[in-house]
Image (cartoon, rainbow, N blue to C red; front, side, top):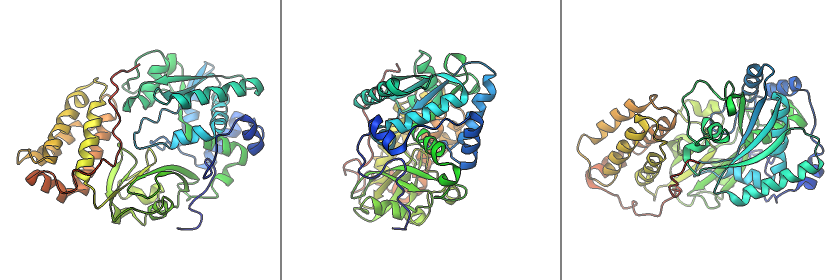
Length: 423
């Protein structure tokens, strides 16, 4: 493993849940920089969002400030983690809730919000209660004027998208909406709203304490700092690792105890990510510049290793069917197109498709991209297209002969129960 790969900033290995007293002993009181000072520090740090979009944090916060123009604003910490293959955010919130809350209070003070919301999936009930207890601790000892509350949302894949979160916090169904307007312009109750992933807020709290140079002391020039990754699949010790952005996939998998067999492919970024052959990415760093040429991004922070003794076609089939079921039913490309694509791919996977099925899939994917009310069909199609490319020979075999000798292996990727509510 390369020296410096593991960098314990947010989540030290073996960390236990911290109460407020533990947090203050470790980090000291939260600093109170002026809004302009913190925005400048975030700008200089190069911190980007860790929720999947990798948007510059300072730019996102400034957009809220610029559109507020004296009005109230709202800040939402996104702890929903609706990506089934990821549990990095739950790990962070579980052990260091007060670091996340520090970042949330910084965000509220910077954009002028008097209301802050922690948004979590309803199934994470135990974690939600722990977060509420942490907020009570802070109310007893903190001088922050922002009111923080915890709100539960549905366990649906698209319910963690920021416009869906805005809808739920506004008292509507947690379904994505067409943009523009974006939340920074018109969000919760029509107010400028900042929606920020909890890992990003944890990094903000550390930048506020230690400064941008400290943050940039690890990683690369274009991708500074660390990232939390969920390492899963064919590894000996699945879990969450915090690594600098110059870490390679090989070193990340080595941290997880190494592979349980010869690796065939890696799913990078989660179910809206991409499959890629292990040999193509093994020596690559996880920084954006290293991955961009491969059309890959860290996204939701998932690194799932597919062993050679597993079936990428069967794994893709199950995930694609799940994504098709997660449609909010608001537009034809998603409500009609995705189920049709998933059904056609399933027929390919079991050897019951027409000879022209692969050409039809390619054409249907092109018809769907960019035409949905949200990015759900785009993400699902990107996932499928990467499988058609990475597992091309296997896909052709399945289309001709049905399942391969690895098709009946237990599922590697998690497929949650389908929750049909949106409230």
